[in-house]
Length: 169
Image: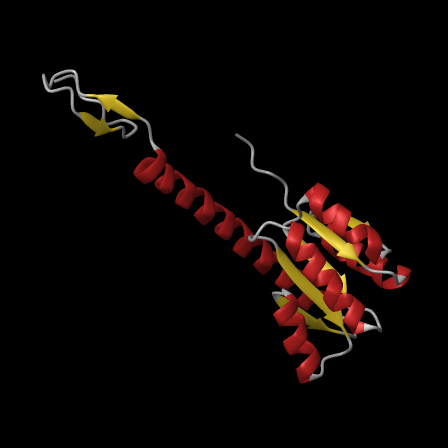
């Protein structure tokens, strides 16, 4: 089974910065969907379920905080939200993290830092998704698994079903 190509959603209204980011990520072979309007970002998050969202906080950071919260409501828990902004005041960064962001990149943008953080975020997202899948499998086996009647036992007791553990005795 082929693994899914990582998706990155870029929310950036500045055309020059958007093109710079798309070029840098494209050179790394990373698939990126971009949108200029914040209003479309939430629906794209719901539709594409990106591994990482890169979000320009915009001048009015209160709207950016609401956008982060709205995106978080439709994103998988394993997805990362990375804010790009020149508003690096302690209180702004605290509010961004409280709203659901995982990381913060300061403008003016250092492309090398961006690429490093995106690659790290993708690794963490994939690890988180893998751990969530393993947890669901363990939960299924331990709690929700069907049962088999032990036909070898004349009392007809029920034993838990464990994949690969069927005995012929």
